Length: 182
Image 1: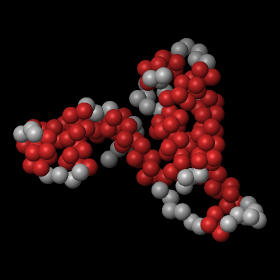
Image 2: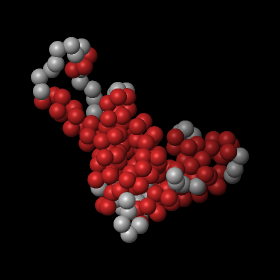
Image 3: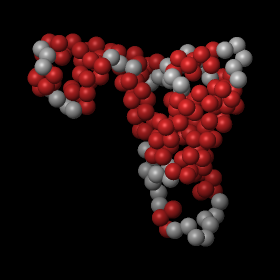
Image 4: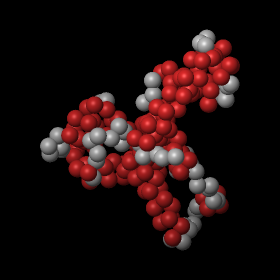
C-alpha cells in the first residue's frame, strides 16, 4: 500500500484504527525493523517486539497521526527509539539474572541519534529528483570535485555547479519538512 493510500486512510472522517495500523505496518514494517535491529545491536527478537509495540502505540494514537506528513517514519522511529531506551533502563534497574553472560552487561555507545538522522536524511534524499540525488551522490557522498563529477557524469562543469546549488536547496527544504533544522 503506497503513501497516497495511507494518507487516504488518515484523512477519513472517522478512520478505523485497525485499517490505519495495517497500512502503517505494510508501508513501514521493513524500514522500521531495520532501524530497530541496529538500535538493539542485532537482537532480532527484541527488535520485533519493539516494532510490535511501536505499531500498538500507533494504533492507540491513530486519530492524532498527521495526515499531511510526507512520511510517518520519523514519528515511528522516535517511538521505537524511546521503547528501546525504556527497555534498557528497565533491564538496568533490576538485578542481573543468573545465566546472562558477561557480554550482556558490556556498555554499548549510544548511536541512536545518528541512526535516526540517517533514516531522516535517507527519506529526504528520496524526495529529491533523480538528477539532484545523482549530483549530491557524486559531489558530497563520493567527495568528488566539480570537475571530476562533471567528467564522471558527462555534463558541463557549470551544470554541475547549478545542480549542486539547487539540490542542496531542495534537500534543505525536504529536511525542514521532516523537522530537521540547521
